[in-house]
Length: 112
Length: 113
Image (tube, rainbow over all chains, first blue to last red; front, side, top):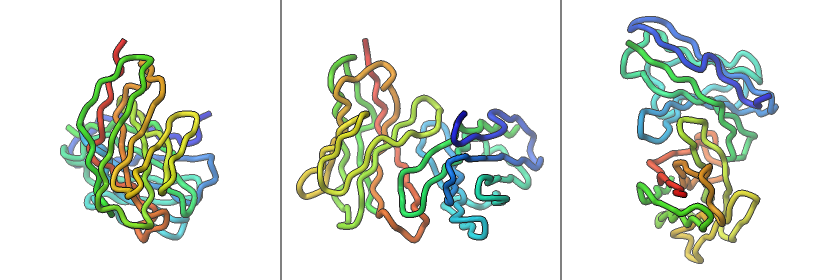
């Protein structure tokens, strides 16, 4: 089984809808991250969490919120989806002090 | 964080060595060089990292110049499955932004038969 899983893998929604993307990990890592990737570009950090009680904004947090329900689970929400949030979303995990991150398979989100 | 410069694309013949350059002329003394790759819309995959010594693992070798202003990732015997976008990233091992990786545009490597 994969160490970092994301659900759903694909989602099509309409403008204004609330969407939640979920990430689970079995690596036992404290740190978790959410990135988005626009076509042909690199990844941009949305939010990151050092542990269950520590959540931090990344480069592009506007329009997004997160919840760290447990060490193994980190959810990303779009409160009111808009078309320019159409992108690939990746979750990642790492140990403290390590830049070696482990990525999930990604969620392809389309906002119409 | 220091920025990196990579060629946007490269080709390599299958079975030959692929040498991917990265310029990081403003790198600081405490910053590591990390390489990741992303195979068509999959999650990025860690390859290798180093501080100042050359490093080798089962996937690749990393050669860092003595002044640390540039590095080269070497895939010794490229296969078609190595076709991917390769990202060179420099960052301190410990940073206030929670070990944030800053991904640039990367190099799109095409391995051809």
